[in-house]
Amino acid sequence: MSDYVQMWKDLGMDLETHDLLCQVLPTAVGDVFLSQENRPKAMDFWDLVISEVHGIRPAELIKAQAEGRKVFGTFCVYVPDEVVIAANGIVTGLCGGSQFWVPGGEAVLPKSTCPLIKASVGARLGKTCPFFRIADIYVGETTCDGKKKAYEILGEDVEMYVMDVPQMKREKDILRWKDEIAAFAKKVEEVTGNTITPEKLAEAIKVINERRRAMQRVYDCRKSECLPISGRDVLLMTQIAFFDDPVRCAQMCNRLADELEQRIKDGVSVVPKGTKRILVTGTPLAVPNWKLHNIIETSGAAVVCEEMCTGTRYFENLVDESGTTLDEQFMALSERYMKTNCACFTPNTGRIDDILRMVKEYKVDGVIDCNLKFCCLYDTEKFSVTRALKEAGVPVLSLETDYTDTDAEQLRTRIGAFVEMLNG
Amino acid sequence: MADVVRWYILFANYEQGMALHDLLDRNEIRNRIAPAPRAIQGELSCGISLLIEEEDIAAARACIDEHRAPHHSIVPLAGQIKPHRDRYC
Image 1 (tube, one colour):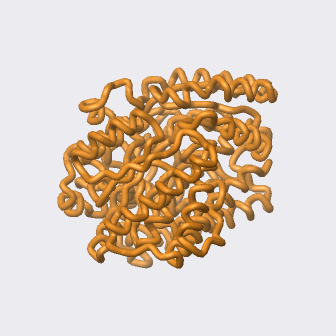
Image 2 (tube, each protein chain N blue to C red):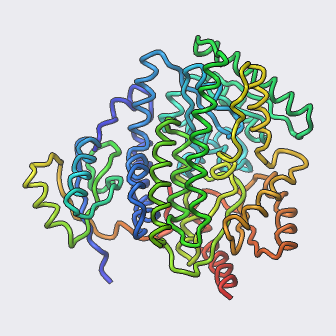
Image 3 (cartoon, chains in turn yellow, green):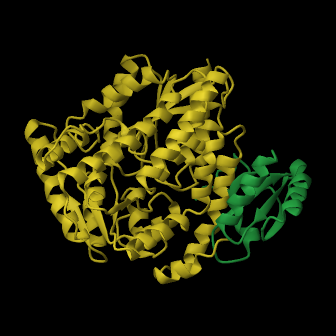
């Protein structure tokens, strides 16, 4: 019963409404995570963080602000954390994964907007997310039309900076994204009052690369036939990474990877031998969106990989660390970030290549391609993803869902039938 | 079938909770970090608890008494964990 009430009051939060969220979160955490047997001991860290999700980290951010640091709230894996860190700023994710916030978003956005966007706007306007209250500035990006319009609304309430993500991946687009990163660096310098030097940016690139390596180590353990961790637990690790200090995040992920590698050596698996292995692809699963993973893993299958922004898109591909000038470093950043295969690009065949590669790497039995309702980009890509998987002989199930519980039974029926089909 | 009863150790802050978590681990008493269920929190706040299964609660109590480990209370609660409940946030 840590007393964060005064902190939340000082942030101007709506305590009465926020308490409704506090009431439901423990139940969901119990059902999704504590129902599992034989979880890795290192998950203690993430159990603590999720138990105090609106307490510990917000308190750390407020303390850092009191020491003069600035907090940048971001929405997308395309915003380069390295630039903010090089200026001694802090990056935090923002709330957006719960139905709790959706009605607040629908008050100002069309209902036919994806739940992630509606929840984000609802969390800010409803004053029920400490991260939205703490951030000194939000950094958006042009990865979908819904977000672009939502940023205009958010911008009336708080300072908003939007990065213009190219929609194609030609050489000139990579150069354009480099210029966009350079312009963002100027903005970050203005907000923080700190100069970004090549030395500081080099160090920041190393910090974020180290986080990527650590997360990749955890994912590499999921490639083993002996599966040492559930998909639910890895999803939680990834979701929290967006909010955590990147150095601590890397330490904790490495500690988890150490344990998982030992488990593999010892033959310790969280599922019976022969459990069907699922790759999940599609739109991001922001915390606390655990519905899909929980249904899959309580239907007799295991999630072994997420080709998602809350998955491999977050940490695959390192930034080249050899640059010694800002110009070289901005180019290295651009080249790395432009390898992220988001459905906002045309064409986006790289995503299909990624999925087919991961099917082999993670020894996948079947793919579940799931998008949030009203995300027409990922919904449209289902056609080419499904075709490519069918041509490769990989079973695929296409789903669409939102944050409500009302379709859970239907999802259970469809996913259960899919797993049954995989089991032959 | 009756709902399973589990025990939740509540704390004034997470530092106390983590200290007891480490203590119980050292004494090989099974415990898991869990968000304190709102039904037993009684205050307007989130926070951690330690979840203890029925068969381990006597050993946990003995360990707490022996080390005078700071905690707020120990509360039983039934039916908290149901993986097929499908009630998400």
